[in-house]
Image (cartoon, rainbow, N blue to C red; front, top):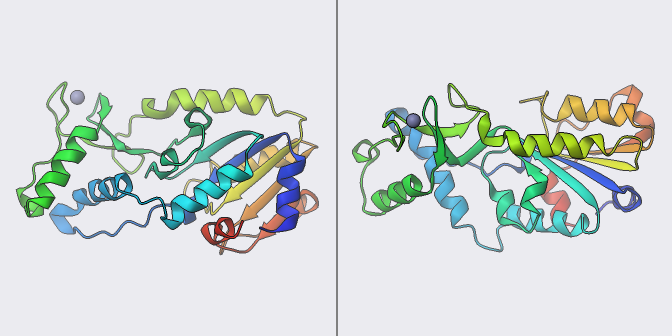
Length: 241
Ligand SMILES: [Zn+2]
């Protein structure tokens, strides 16, 4: 771990973490065309079966160790939920882009556990994509899709309670020693992490910003004084700590 970064975290009371696409589960996209809808379920099946020595999971665990004793909150744009399998306090994470483990129809959100298990079983039985029935909502029987921002008609209720907790937490960091740690966040959904984090760093006199990114590591002029840029993939960066 970069010593400057380590010191910034150590010196802070609060740590705000933003997690982006560079820490997302790499989807295999084994299914194409009409069957492409299965890919998200395939990812969910893989994440459920993640071994303890998985690199991404180890990176999360190292981050958890780094944040020990800190008042932290994590905002992730990833929808793979792998972070919930690590030892972070789940109450201190918000995932506004949704979760592939939750499903939705036009009006209802429900736990996707049973449908994921059914699809897993059918795939193991050797069924082809076209032979697998698409999930339906158990309440209204209409077609269901993952409760993620990529799905049309995305229902935001799935994450709003955790988002409220985040907003409350953030209001407590005002003029406190805050370290903002941005890990592999690009410009996919800039209004979720990238822009508001920069604004928070700018407005809080005692804030520092650490931006870890393999490509988009640049820091704007106005934040130069309080920011550190680490041009590295965040998974590699965390695995070294
Ligand atoms: Zn429904």
